[in-house]
Structure formats: structure tokens, C-alpha cells
Length: 354
Image 1: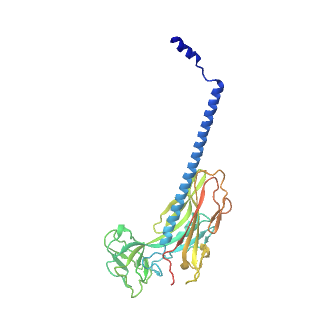
Image 2: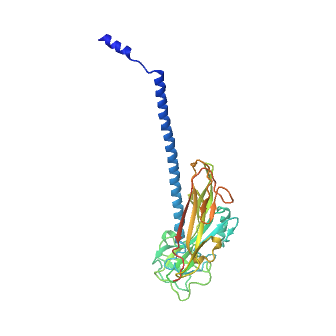
Image 3: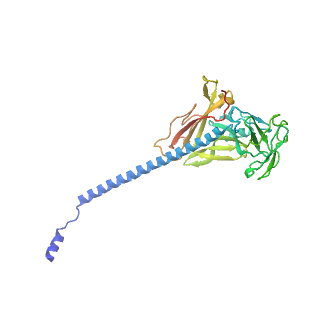
């Protein structure tokens, strides 16, 4: 038995050199395939992640601007076919205004606060100014307000939102007035809100008209959307972003990064009735802002990862503008992903004629 075992052991032989080399080659081939699959999978994941982030940022950017555009000119039940009488000094209620931001403004804004953006907003990108009333609620008035009054009384000042020098709107279904607060209202509970000639014109609400308990009390919102440089750098790219400037409280907030350009066209009604037509023009070509019934917005967004196999030489069509890799107004090129996002909005609070 022992001799048989020893004979069996002597008959066992190891791998030959050729067999070993073949095995190593097969192993290396399989490993190379696994490495290539990993690299391809990783590259695909990076592209999908960058594209998903680009899609998400683009959707959010368009939605944020759209919300303010759709609220522009809102003054409660007075919004459609109504007018806002401005009593406040150094104020205006314009609802919607647009500007071409180039070496000079086109058109030239009347508001100095907007003009200060000349050195901040990106050249070649449009600027939109939107104004609207923000309702604090109905049934806040504790007494009627007529043409002889210079103040009104409310049952509450929610969270102290009405403060001295603020602009507020009294809105009924027949008329609305924009007033400047000249006293210091209580921050909660019942309080009086004054609008004396210290901050308003000498005229008060129209003679014979009275604001009653059903009046809507509103704060005045005045915001500007624009594209600005964040001052940051990511992977060699300057980081541009969509900004929202609140001209009421002075806050200037970065909303979405990666927005390189914004272009806006305005749908201007040229005639009324069944045969009425609408033309889309840039801000410089608008004849009458009161005839704007719709707005088109387009934004160019970029990722900051070097995803593309070659530098981006694409010309991106943004409504009436072309943004390419070179020229006066151009994108930053490189191997980043880019995509345009656009929407068309019918204004909800624009005046109309039957």
C-alpha cells in the first residue's frame, strides 16, 4: 500500500512554463476587461451625474424665475384691467420691465437701484425687473379708509412685516393705491399705519372712494433677476450664477450656480380682438410694456466636470441670441456639459380688452 502511494505521488506533474504563460495571459486579459468595464462604468456614471445635476439646476432656475414672472403686476382682485395709483414718493408700480445688459443699458432703467447692476450683471445676459403685491390677508382693516384719511388701522401686523418706509398696497376690486409707511407700526397686534405727506404726495385716495373691511392689504415686492459672477472657480471654470435682488430689503441672493446666460423675449400684443396678434421682441424693442401678454425665457447652464471628450465648440441658440465658444458674448468652452432650458409663460395679471 505504501509503495502504491509513493508511486502515485511520483506520477503527479506541475504546470509547464507554456501552460503557466497561457494562464497568466488569460488572467491579464480578463483583468484588463474588468478594468475597462470599471473605467467605462465610472465615466458613464460621471456623465449621468453631471447631466442629472444640469437638468435639475436648469429646471429649478426656470421655475424660480417663472414664479416671479407669473406673479408680476398682482394686486389682488384689481390685478386684471386695474390700475395702481402711486401716492408714495420715489416709487412706481410697473409690474414687468426688461433690460438688455450690454456696454450700456437698453432701455436705460429709470430706477437707480437697477442701474447699480451695470457692473455686476453679466454683459450679454438679460435683466428682468418684476413687481407685485404680496397679500397679508383680507379683513385686516378695522375701520374704513376714505379720501380724507392719512392712516389706516389693522387688526394685526403679522410678524411685524409692515415697517417704517415700507411700501404697502391697499387693494379693492375697483382700485388700488401704493403708499409709503411714515410711522413705526407695532410689530404685532392692532396698530395704525400712517401714510402722511412726509413720504407721499399731497393727494390721498380718490375722493368719494372708500376702502372697506373686504380690502386686501399687501406688501410691495420689487425684485430683479440677473446673471452674475460668484467670484468662485471650479475646475478652472469661472462660476456664474442666477441671482435674485430684492430692491425692498436689499438682499442679493445667489439662487442657482452654473447659469451662464439668460435671454428673455416679450410677447407684445399688437392688436385686439379675434384677429389680434402677438410679436416677440427683446426689451429694447418693446413699444408699450402695458401690452406685454407673455414672456419667453431661455437659460444656458453648464456643469463643472470635464466630461466631454473634446472642448465644447457648440453654438447654443438662445431665442434671438447665439452663444458660441468665441465672440463678444461667449461661453467658457472647455469639456464641460452645457444645455439650454426654455419656457413660454402667459402673464396672469396683464390688462386685456374684450
